[in-house]
Image (cartoon, rainbow, N blue to C red; front, side, top):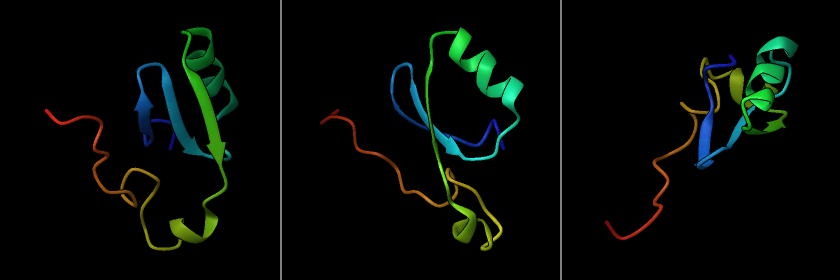
Length: 61
C-alpha cells in the first residue's frame, strides 16, 4: 500500500497506517512529509486511501 497515497501538496502525502517501515523511511529521507492514517474499515471495501477519495481541487486552473 505504500504506493497508494493522496498528495495533499508538494512534499506532503497521506498513506494508510501499517505500510512497510522501509518504504515510509525512504519517503521521509527524500524529504516527503508522510502522514499515516488508520483506515482499516475503509479498506474492507477492497480499496485504499487513493481509491476512497475524490479528486482534490487545488486551485481554479
